[in-house]
Length: 144
Ligand SMILES: [Fe+2]
Image 1: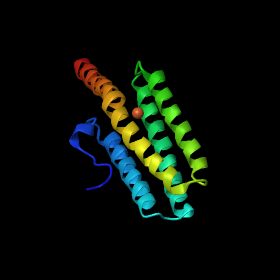
Image 2 (image 1 turned 180 degrees about the vertical axis):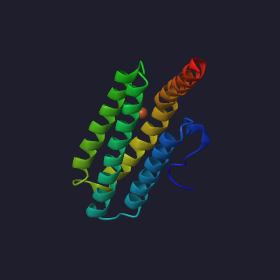
Image 3 (image 1 turned 45 degrees about the vertical axis):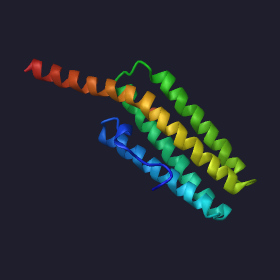
Image 4 (image 1 turned 30 degrees about the horizontal axis):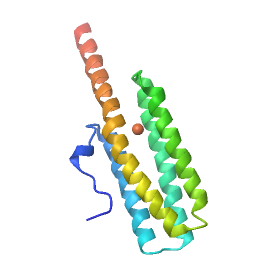
């Protein structure tokens, strides 16, 4: 069993967002396992940098979708993303001082943060996105 398991409960029923979340979970596992096996600073730093970049790209994709669908809670959701990226950036700097400890702390933070963020905020956003799609389809079909 891996450190951070994907389960259907975490699905927001959007294939692209789910795919991103699964990729992130995979990288959190990679960071955790590398820290557990006490890999050197270079290896941990490489994984953490890749994870941080992917997180940033994923957040941007979500935010683009939110803007495109005029999501009302856009600002609050974007703020949650910004705070997490700031925390991860701090941890990236701390990694040099205590690599195993910091890498494990980062994995733990992301496991907890991603789980609650997906369940509370992303699901709420995805629901609106689905509704937006449904309305757009409905409008299109009623115009015919
Ligand atoms: Fe999000």
